[in-house]
Length: 464
Ligand SMILES: Cc1cc2nc3c(=O)[nH]c(=O)nc-3n(C[C@H](O)[C@H](O)[C@H](O)COP(=O)(O)OP(=O)(O)OC[C@H]3O[C@@H](n4cnc5c(N)ncnc54)[C@H](O)[C@@H]3O)c2cc1C
Image 1 (cartoon, rainbow, N blue to C red):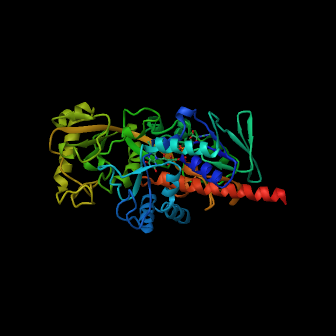
Image 2 (image 1 turned 60 degrees about the vertical axis):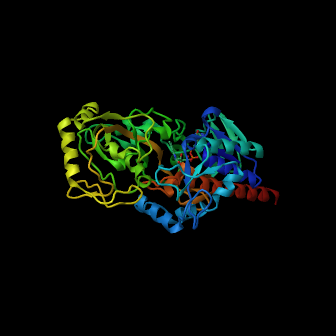
Image 3 (image 1 turned 30 degrees about the vertical axis):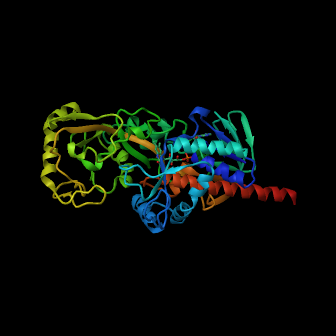
């Protein structure tokens, strides 16, 4: 069988199928030194558990996980598939360990995640390397630098894959080639032009790999595969405006949004910075910034916030007065001072606690800041310029609980999808930290098992 892609979902599928006895060829578009897609940038996965489990504290029951997902997606999720992911997340770490993945407790100060998310020792790069080592040991064949650009299909069944003139025939296939987030032209087309005449996507940076061009996603949709999701929906983080176009990874993230205010280029606030815990909200801020003039915004904090969040790798602007900070950020001084003064006057102080949804909020201010609202009044002041950073897109292929790709509402008998290519079934919009790897791991394993079963059926059929 064939696995197309070389990140977490592809590797989980390849390993599972191989364990079930299938002979597996994995085709990775990237050269070996860039293998692993967006998965190399990850740090953790979200897991349900009813009691403390090794690196996970307390409990995170199925219902709470489901409610978190329901809230962030605004109901744009397939409950059966989502619950399948959630339930399987309970067991999956034993299997991951057997393939060389090690876990560690979450670092203090990282997004309140010690209860819900298991961190990979050495991050996603170590996880991917462990899986490749295990794949090699089990006899999975791997080819690097092979970009599959089309499939040969017959009546919704996979026949062969092509990379240029090279043809790969197989009895079944798992697609795990990511979303289309690396394809700048497609992002530009999907986001279009706004009412100010700007093309917002031209200001985006891609947080991860350059290899997820969505070639197969587009091809499959054109060939009649059922699609799910909206092409403008994506995991999008507000990142350091100095981030590179590709592969900036997590070190370009700016995590102080909930501790201060965020203003646009007109020095005006535009959204509740304290709406919910940062892990449940950080992925909406890229989109919010994308909707602002010039797709820029500025996170502004004062000295009280320092020490309460993971400091960004690159220092921001620092000044002893708000006026000086405005000059450094090229914002209108008077407007920024007024915005901060209005915010400060509206703050109703309670017992500040960044670990809970506390009672420090604003009164009579639009938009409100509903938690962690403390006046910005203690120098030095800090400002970070932000731009939208696309993590992964949600437009994907519709699948069933066996991970089968659908054509005209009918599941394929031998073509399966996993990871970002189908994450839109569970994530119509929004995000909750760590669920990308949970979806990829669970559906990677399901797709691998389904493909191995399909293979067995075919072999038995041929023998009969
Ligand atoms: C900076 C960053 C941090 C993140 N942190 C986390 C985190 O901590 N926890 C979490 O859950 N999620 C996180 N994510 C999201 C996570 O990376 C994805 O949900 C997950 O890695 C998706 O796995 P995947 O296998 O579907 O895609 P990928 O890992 O991106 O793999 C796709 C693979 O397909 C290959 N490919 C693409 N096109 C082709 C083609 N035509 N032919 C052959 N191969 C092809 C690519 O080279 C790549 O190897 C993060 C993402 C980024 C960018």
